[in-house]
Length: 185
Image (cartoon, rainbow, N blue to C red):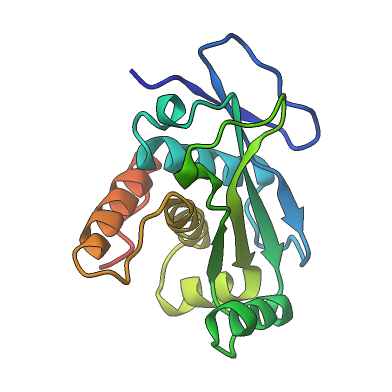
């Protein structure tokens, strides 16, 4: 049975509740306006749900007490710069995932440090524009971007034939737990 995952605040050092728990630290960074961006606690809940739903048994497999996922909210200029640098696409994009690669290696964390699963960079203006264009609630689209990004950090890939269906199904199921509709219809 997987160990429970506890969400922790970025403003305090996470505390172990007992030896069987895995703590997930989700610091939120704002490099753009917060207008229209869900509350950091909501972003964290979506990230925690995606981690738990995307990696059944991960806590046991990773053998670490604490994992971190950083979510950075950016404007169009930073998103465009990162997308051009890392993907060769000269335009801002909704979400970029930067996996650390450490989780795949199953490396134990040193002392009390967190194992960084990776970083998500979410472009607030692109998410807002896409929600309007796709006639989606902004909240459901934000949830989709966080869940989609965390699944990428966990190794899911929609560019590989056969894996897209698995990733999309996982996304739809996770979004449904929050009462959000299928984002692909």
